[in-house]
Length: 499
Image 1: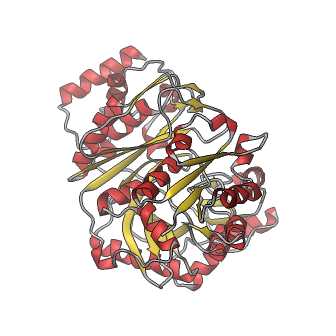
Image 2: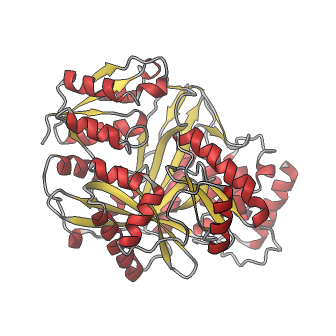
Image 3: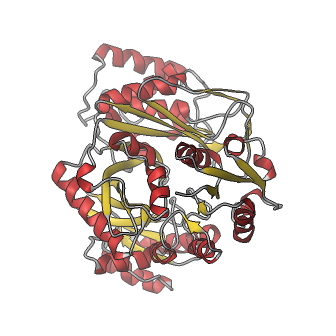
């Protein structure tokens, strides 16, 4: 095992990795820009080195400087976390060329999966089901029209080097194609310095299911069940859970085996995730592969009892997997809510400022992976995610109940957060009973109404959630509820008075 590793990241994921390393008696080295000097991840590590850069974001992307610090500090390996350089093949190669160990997959695996079109081609050859569409980047609008007609509307234009919903446009008719095509290319160029896009069939009302895989350098592969990431806003995940409400044992096994085949196809080593779309008939299609530790990895850890961060270190050190496929058992249910510094009552605009007070929830089955504390400064320079709140229960309703309590007890003062909105989501009947897909947030919440609300009373938010903004007493869709009809009517009247 390593004696010392450098964590090439910041925030909650840097704390998470440092915690795992400390439990394995491995020393950690943090890197930080001046704006992060007082953040918890810096003090939590054993050593900390300042990054010299005018731009905070570019500091964490400075490959040469990061490797120089790793050598200077005596670190033997570098863990990239997620985001920043985590899926940068050039960085992984530079780490290896410097005589260090990259705690992640091989550079060639990152490179082959980094191109969405290239990944589709590799997966198709490996027999992995993919969404109908083209495999090569589209050069002209005329070519886009021809492919769109062949695939059939609705379609999805996607950035070849994309992720996080950037450079992605849904097109429902030929009249929308031209504007969407050029808009997607502009957004892709701005976000990824690469304007290549491709087209695939839009699977309407799908479930977004991802399979966690791990592999060692000795040829051992395993899948650790699935995560349901369908609760999204503008293609950005907000709530994740494991296991999914739509997978049975047979489908889980089939998807797991396909995910392992996908990993083998790119000679994958370490932890990774294969993402799929599952349609209403339970057909599943390859979406993309994330060649890193996922933001939502804690829900898998909670239901399997396997520490993925520790497993990453063991694999990178040349060890075999500490478990076999037969050892993987799913126990109970876990849910994760991402805590963003965003104002849900103002179009989810990011908020900045000093955290004057922070009280994290606790109790049996409650976990908080946080990058903040009282006194932390939230700046405009980075992603607004502050922490992740995870709950585990003996079943899904137990996990949801713990999440409701935990969200109510989570207090952050000084910046606005989406905690009230998350409470509304987990209390919504369609979420509670599993009647949701990737369009849930847009379909269930009327944001014009939401933006009129200027209150902090979570009871009001919960009342709104009880109905859903687009659901009313005359809704034709049957929804089970624990509430009695007269209570629903009381809540509806209260909402009308407030608005």
